[in-house]
Amino acid sequence: GNAVGMTRIAHITDLHVNNKRGVRIPRMIMDEGDETIISPGQRFLWRCLLDQQDTIKELAKRYKAEVWAVFGGDICELDIKQRTLKVHTRNTKTIEAMTIETIKPVIEISKRAFFCAGTFAHVGDSATSEERIADDCKISEIVPGTKGKHITDQWYIDCEGVKFLIQHHGKLGRLPWTRANALNQKAIRLMVQWGRKLPQVFIQGHNHVYDTASKAYPILVVAAPGMCLPTEYEYRIDADTAKVGGLYFVCNQGKILDWDAMLYEPGEIPLWSLK
Image 1 (cartoon, rainbow, N blue to C red):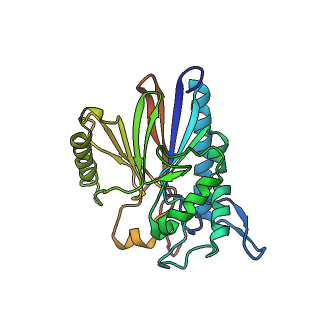
Image 2 (cartoon, rainbow, N blue to C red):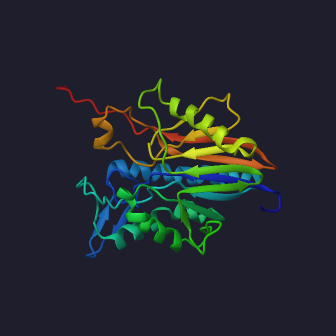
Image 3 (cartoon, rainbow, N blue to C red):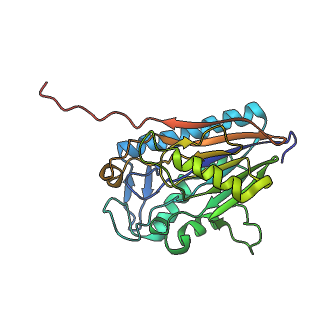
């Protein structure tokens, strides 16, 4: 910890950098020396990322806290199964460079960074691209019990006495009135699995939708929002349009002093009319 023993966790997941529906830096020199710029939708996502950076900085200053960044997986988009044409490039090296530049606003204000492995179809077999991105990050933490590995499927983090269990994958209902069912089930399963050693917080990503389990449970179970716009898949399964954003937690002496989701509305569907 730091001098005042206060730390702020900033959680961001599912950036899908390189997917044209995901967040990325405004301009990027590609593999052939050509320059690409972001779409209006990606500009909205980039502004959301910078706004989260401002929110995190402001809270860190208010609480005199240092910032730990957690990347919850699917940080980039390799599209291994080639399910879409909506990617900027197939060049893995360029994708990784674009991702490293995109996460800079978060890294710049953080003292430590933790990287979760995402879905192999997005980030490469055995999350190889995410691993290289994590290795490149000078503040990325080493997974306990490994010889220098910077990425894992599940992080168990002690943040000023508050225990966080964080992973990429997790179940979630598709309808507003069923969405939290899987999170309530997860809370009970964790209570059975962990017993008296139960962490205070469990966070999952993957679904790009924000929700929480019932507050009746002794563990806070959170499904984190993503940082990408709806894809063809979400329209195909008739999913609700999700808000985008991230999470923050302020921890001190075993307690969560403050936490919230930083959520942003992608905007309404534009209306076509004869007028």
